[in-house]
Length: 157
Image (cartoon, rainbow, N blue to C red; front, side, top):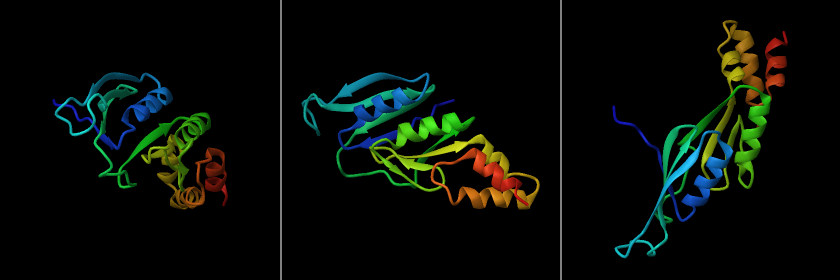
C-alpha cells in the first residue's frame, strides 16, 4: 500500500517548524533537507523541503512562498493519556503561538493542533447521555482541557 504523507506549506520556516515538531514529539527525526537549485523558483541554496517523522509518521515541510497559509480547516490531533501529557503538548505547541478554545492551539507557525485527552472522548461517549452532555458542556467552556474538571462536571448530578 502506498503511504500518505502530509505536506505542510510554509513561506520560509519549514526547517524551523520541523525542528520544533521533532523536538516536541518522541521518536521523531528530520530525515532529509533539500535545497533549491539554480532553476529556482526560490533563492539558490535556500531550503526547499524538509522530510521528517513525528512519532514514526512521515511529514514534509515545503518552503513554497507566501501564497498559502494554514487555517483551522486542517489540524493535527494529539491524543494524550493524562493531564501531564495535555499540559506538556499544550505548552510546547502554544509557545509563541495562540491558545484557542476546546483544546485547540496554533503554534508559532500558524498550524493548528488539538490537544485532546483520551478521557474526554470516553466522557462524551458515556452511555449515560446526561453525563456525556455535562462533560461536553464543561469542555466547551475550556481552553486547555482539564481532565479533573471534566470528570467533576460529568459526575455532577
